Length: 327
Figure 1 (cartoon, one colour):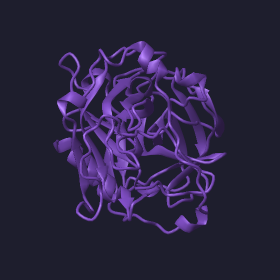
Figure 2: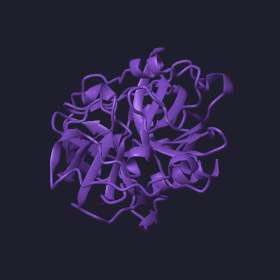
Figure 3: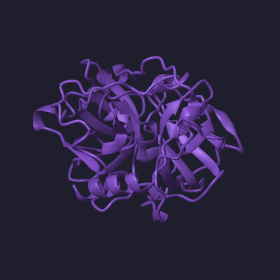
Figure 4: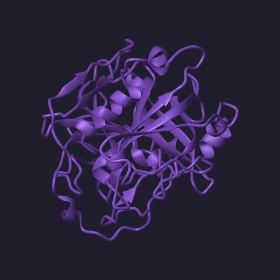
């Protein structure tokens, strides 16, 4: 398989499945449905593997240089259904108002609120044997164990699933204040690869994780809302994650402001300078600055020199989420 070439674009923090059992990759026999990979016990890392030193040393990986024109991907590749809203599950934390009408240059999130606990890092081991880092978010789900991230953090461009996957909410400089939630199942949409190529408009993924000390991540830190088939256009957005070009990935960073014209077949675009490591970070609508909670409508997946892009959480994402809930 190959990564789809896109002009001047990098696919952030690729999760390339080192030591992972190679499950059947999306293809002719796996279309139009959620695709699950149940992590074999021997490939599921525990806390002993992800030491503070190893977490700090994990590196974001980028895709090969891209050459295609963004205009080739303008057609809408996704269906639109009825809007589905799943409300946040908050723990009450007061939050300041840290951003104004437009913050294209990333800043450190110091305002607290629910987001300071539900956002976190996704760690894994890649197909080349190297440890990598991405971002993710706890969302409200039936069993409280679903983490939203991106597809390319879960499977690589050769169809190898990532191994040693853990989610660390409220990560800060090597610490895991609520524990390291080990993944037991990864979910992507089967059409994420088509004709051997990576499809940016379907670059989303869900992790189902094991409890820590008898608590799911939802019980431990709360969960953000999530929205599918969003009808809102041009609304204020907030994008968060752990980019390596912001405090070396040590702290949660954010960009906020108005959306701009999307490209590459993606639904959402925001001027933002967050780089590798932020892939999978939450993209919000209706964010409440008082509580630090809102509805996740996408995950950070692609970025060119000035602009970040996110896939549409349409019917495909909803079905993938429901499959993760039922796992």
